[in-house]
Image (cartoon, rainbow, N blue to C red; front, side):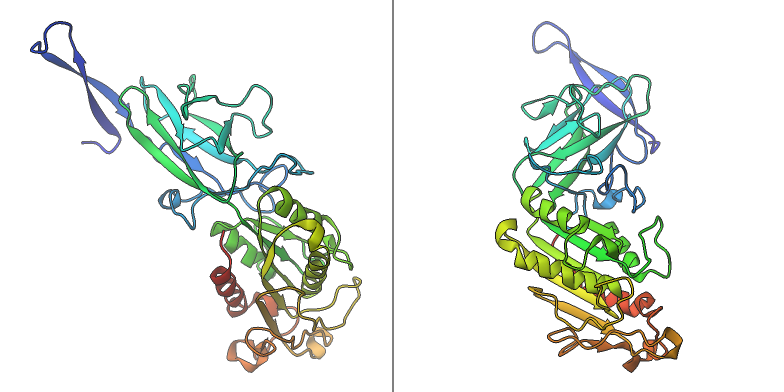
Length: 372
């Protein structure tokens, strides 16, 4: 049989006694590639930037770890740059002349035809089945899935035929219970794609592709007292998106901002809610009391349960900029001087965050301690 053609044999029973003959009516089915549902990684603000629009690979659409994650959209959840908690799903018109519907596993999934949830654009479900989808003459349609129920949890959305009750495709959503914050160095701003010489954002990109909810930011979005737009978004995630676990890491002044953000979160946790700072990391940390602060960041991030520290010794080649040992860090007891390793022998402040070994050490330790 052609890989693009599937014939369903639908029995048509004529009137009369049970012994009457059964006519088999062939229904022509065109199967498109990819399959019916294509789901994407989370949005940010008015679109996907500072990440590219990235689909979840077909083979991971039902993976409990690396499959599609979705933010809880709490009733007072803030979206200052626009609604960005809904996940984009594109539905291919895979069947001709056959009614198809969506089936959800429960009411925690709401589905809209507009990303802003405009009035009158929510799909209605009866016993968790939608009305037949109306494609018109289009080959596909775009819908937006919202997590509108309790969390953390899993939920499925399936595309199936109505009459023959055949499942075409299914995706498994997990509601995010964690948030990863990545803070670049002085003058580094997230871009699409990340610059090759901005190792912090390369790590963030890898984590996004692995299914984490990741907030990339310029370190200046964290003030010296820890306040600012990053703090506001983290608090919003804890209070309204069911986030209970945080990972925060940064390079140079971004490491100083990592300390300052952790310090404020810990000091004000009584008014924020229940959360854990499960992972932090510095790469060549510099305090960030101002744009010209050159002091080493040698303070352990307050309340961090696991801290990775990597640094180099400054020289004339980087104006003697360097991080330094930090108590209670990994590798114990104070972190890794990369210049004691062959790969980092000639490290400077300007390249230490770009070494593959440095990035991989952050990735492996974060993944071991952070759920999605």
